[in-house]
Image 1: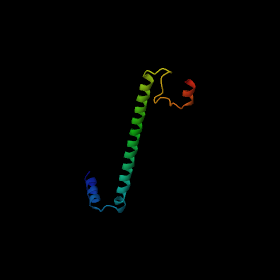
Image 2: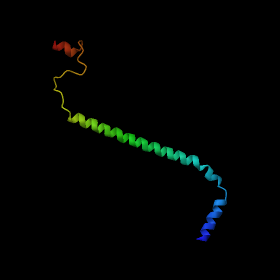
Image 3: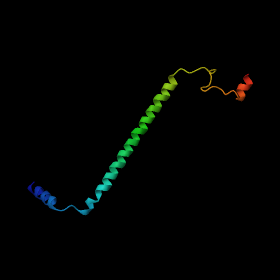
Length: 85
């Protein structure tokens, strides 16, 4: 065990290799990309859940009869309106 302590002591006294100094940027970029992917995945799941809830509520809601007026009404110049009158 003493040999391991001495080995780690010598390793700690040596300078950091230059290759390790350049690795920081790649690690930080990888972490950022992973965080963005997780955020996109959570956003997509939330949008799907909202769509399921709205679709389920629309399916369970009572529907209007077929003779109901359209949402914005029929224009007076529409051919089908002119035929009815």
